[in-house]
Image (tube, rainbow, N blue to C red):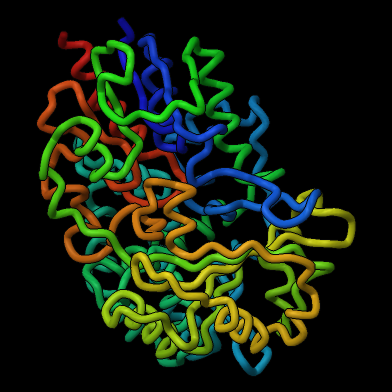
Length: 469
């Protein structure tokens, strides 16, 4: 009998398996797809030689993750590549605000009226960043906070809606960049604790950047899987699990799946029926014959580029997708251009590029024209660079990754109490009514992103139980 079986080989499932194997437990992972990866995969989606990331591509939370930083993943091929600028947010006038490694450079891009405000906002937290990130990414608390004073100060700044945070700034350049940061998790700007989302992304950039993984996000998953195998763990792909009886006997079962899939497989009935899924995304992967022709020079050297003319436009796009049930006319876009730092992702002189906008959950329309009209506003001539495109709306995204119900890449609405207390309001979110069944996906704290911390936290709950039995 195995000590633990993990279902799902995404970053959280693989991290949970690694953490258990490191502590001497026998572990096997079962994955329905032909390769490991989940939200961290790399594939040739368009043309030969163009290596795209179907989901996550830039990794501010990955490079800052306490779980990943404690593992020897670089020995297994993971290499972080840092663009000159972690992120840029261009404006219609050809200028841009930036999120740079330097707080001073970031603040200067907002203009003189808001530079001091930004510095006063983020600089107090940076010296204590490593302790702070460990404290809030380990919530709900399994131990006392290492720095409760800093965590409390962060809560005072971050728990109110991001609209409160934005009011600190006098000009819209800073407000627009902050709004874009919140939109990375598809949260409404006026939602509870959305100020914390913006602060986390900003502090992560200043602390360690927003890198891409050399060769693509698949290298993160491959490094975790290779380390697991060296620890004696096993990985089985092309193995779909429909019920617990499909799995070998084990003392614990850990699911890197959606709560609804877990309930179906483990026979938990309506235990997660109150869990809500958020807006979906409409994503396009491009093969380009050269760099994106951004008007703003800063955007040409940034790994991630946010697209939204101002904070009002971003807010309207989020509201349309999450509250009005329609696709926005001018979608807010998150784009990543790995080629600025990893040219090997495409043939010489060419580039891979991806962009996505928010749409209602399960939306079946085509947002391609609206996406490209937005891109043309900030990069005139973009369409002329397109060699091929791979388009994925919510149904296609959900078909490729079952955790993304209705195209929700956050694996659950990041709104209200569900931002912090997911998948249910409990201090034991990784446990289920079945004493041997656990959940470790992005539907558990600390939530979405390629960081492995949900798997790390769930593994703690599992090994504590295994040691007691």
